[in-house]
Amino acid sequence: MDKLIRERINANLKRLRLNRMQEVLDPILDRADKESTSYLDVFDKLLTEEICDKEDRRYQAIIKQSGIPFQKTIDEYDFSFQPELDKRVVMNLFDLEFMRKKENVFFLGPPGVGKTHLAVALALKAAQMSQSIHCTTMFDLMKRLKSDNAVRKKGRCRGYYRSSLVIVDEVGYMPISRRDAHLFFQFVCFRYEKRSTIITSNKSFSQWEELFGDSVIATAILDRLLHHSRVINIKGDSYRMNERHQGKDKPRTKAELKLLNHRAFKA
Ligand code: ADP
Ligand code: MG
Image 1 (cartoon, rainbow, N blue to C red):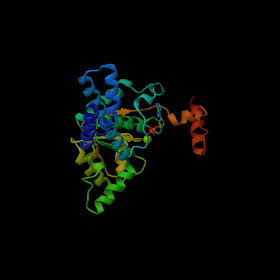
Image 2: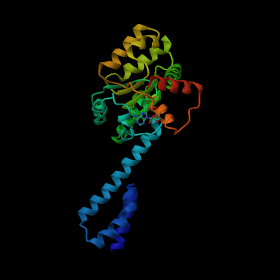
Image 3: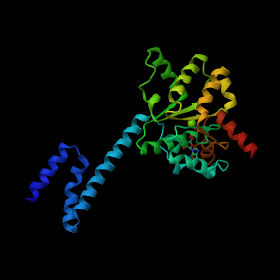
Image 4: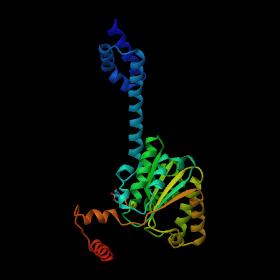
């Protein structure tokens, strides 16, 4: 009798595609028999297994299509290496209130201070909350905006336009033509007050005019991006150089050696 009921439950779980519940049904029921667990407890365990499995799969699917360059969390960020960075202000971002308010976040600073690391850590947190995320560099974003514009798709249905959180990494490494600046302006306007964008840049805002080669468009872009935003300035040393300093990796290029010498000279 018991066996027949189990078989029927198994078949029904299969029909409903409750795969994880089906997987753990027998071990959970066997254990419940031994330990005389209540039906309520069994039902609770089965549902929890199914929900955890579904959420985990959803998280993995979001991460897979997100384009994030690596998976690093905020726990892996060593705040003691950036003593001037206000840990509280950064940690406050992780309640994701900025996303609910459709605010933007800027991480500004020289190379290697952890701008991408912090942006990715925020994106991972958003993915855990089942929010759609997309990570791109400014270079790749401009390439896609141009190709989508050429075929008049305007990317309106694409992840980089519509995701709840988009990271635009490395703004400032290459100059943007006036025509491209207009495409970026359209992208910024589309997301303005509707979705959050994280920008990382090695340039200060006063250098944006030069970056976009046009003061009018640069001001219009910054005006919208900054209207509801949080700005985190990181002024410290490069963590990459620190790792090399400690001999985890040997400096390879002349430019790196020069930079290390320069830092040693400063110290
Ligand atoms: P940026 O984007 O500012 O150039 P990244 O975020 O790419 O710098 O950081 C470079 C590398 O150093 C990454 O592997 C990152 O995880 C690591 N890193 C940077 N700052 C820290 C830090 N304070 N604690 C731990 N790892 C760090
Ligand atoms: Mg970076």
